[in-house]
Image (tube, rainbow, N blue to C red):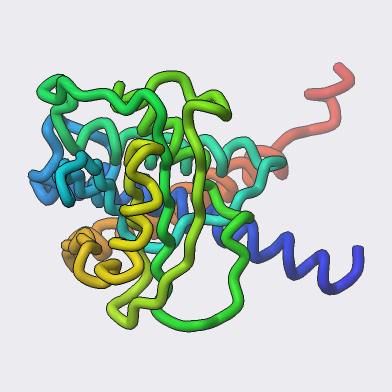
Length: 236
């Protein structure tokens, strides 16, 4: 394995560790009551912001997610499962979709990825399909076969930070809405506020240290047992 591949592998492992830490932090935030925007108890944080709108006489449904979409890595099933769980729950638990009696039969899902700088990024190499799957389960769209659901990816600059805005619009109104979005994209963005509290990080660090000490203690006990084992214990 060359140095480039080794570095890539290390970075992906670090990214996976970050996602695992996020899962833990999300659970702790829920315990402390810091996820009050959820319509029911959920295992993820922060929630998406969901907003049904009427623009120029036609309906739009908007989903807002904090941060950039994570990179897509099909080979790592654990990482993919964590990311899928987050976007599914952040979408489903953020709004009572049973109150919506409207359905987009022929729709367009516009995934607008807002970035805080112009560093080169590949919009295609992101987990955007996980968001589409989560939206499909809300009942707003039917099956997402290619002729009923179109997909559009766009990148936009926003110095306020990285975030993702997803718009669901009918195919009939798609062209008009894109013109509107080009003009109003900055004001349309609803950036979920991060309310991570220092005590949550402190609790996480404490938990990590506790697990580390437990692991070290068990390893010492194992080595001690091994050193006290006589050959006769094995061979009789």
